[in-house]
Length: 168
Image (tube, rainbow, N blue to C red; front, side, top):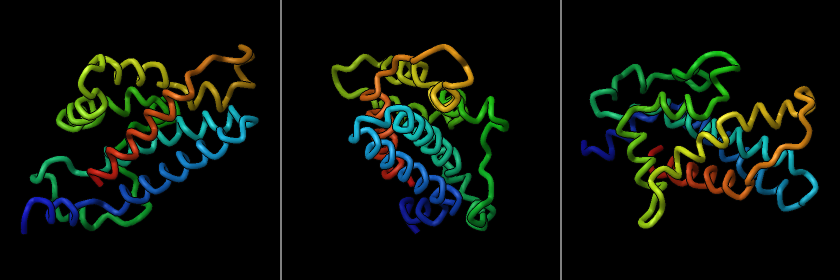
């Protein structure tokens, strides 16, 4: 069995489930944004899609040595190893940091094409780190409207969709 076949057989079903949900939230975000009157739901869905893409990547073994029979036996609905609790699970910076170093490096390289500042990914992760909580709970914070670069949020979500498609 070659390396590609080994990888395809080792993708846990839960990683695929998470990926499909991330894609649904990303597409919903785009659809809401097109209507121009649903900015907050579009931002919340886009931010949640980013979170789910990172969780999907975290649920996939990154090293052929990690392709254990246990990973193959995982049933849909089994929880991947992700930071627990609401405070950690919605921090995309922490989710990114929890990924295998080779995967993080691959994401950085793919996100920063020639001529783009190599710190762009870290800046975007920091900018949107708490976007899901900040916008989902906007009414609780009583801070008034926030500013967000929605095009960059969607750019990150779209990038992670493509990156996941190449890895999952």
